[in-house]
Length: 268
Ligand code: SF4
Image 1 (cartoon, rainbow, N blue to C red):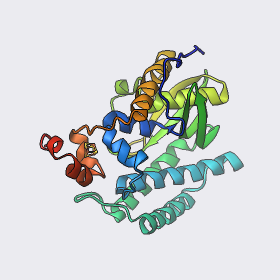
Image 2 (spheres, rainbow, N blue to C red):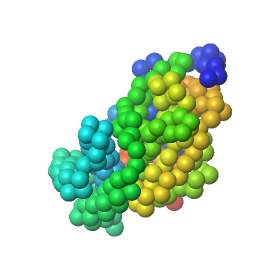
Image 3 (cartoon, helix red, strand yellow):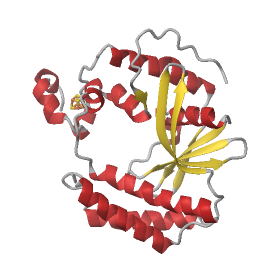
């Protein structure tokens, strides 16, 4: 592993733990980052977010069973677990369903279809090494954290599998050097002291696997460019709003509009 120089970083945010979501949020819009992680303003979770997390929990349930007993849970048990988790999440979190979004019942049906297909595809697959693996890794002056959905044994190293429950499917080429994948691959290789040969975007809606190969260049970009840039800007309290199409999905849109009327005039 190459040595990464972080000695040029003069401004630090020692209390901040860096996840891929935090880094991506800052790079998309510094003001949104401030609302979420500095001001800690609570926001109502959206239905896709809660649906995705419920699916992840159901998949973790079946993989944990597999690692204990050697077999995946039967489909009926997985669906039962998913239904219980979904109803519980709806009651407890009361997610926001945007106008035109699939209803709770429609998402429950989609969840069943996804889990049925997943279990069918995974019935002959090797047992994973880990499921829902939480990590906290020190990288120079930075602490990295996250949760890896699944870790498999590959032919020449570890394979990270990241479940995606959304409808949007990226192009494989766009996943090369993906920030989340790079951070996960770096952290796992550090934690297990083994190389990561691939990161798989597992598109749950249709079962396709899109793969990216992490490299030392990607790691250097994360450690020497992204982290110093974001951590430095946060330490200097640089939280200017950055308007764009992503404002349409921002939980703080009304607050931001009130604070930044001039910027908002430019947003369609
Ligand atoms: S509404 Fe747009 S500019 Fe304002 S915080 Fe959200 S993403 Fe940033």
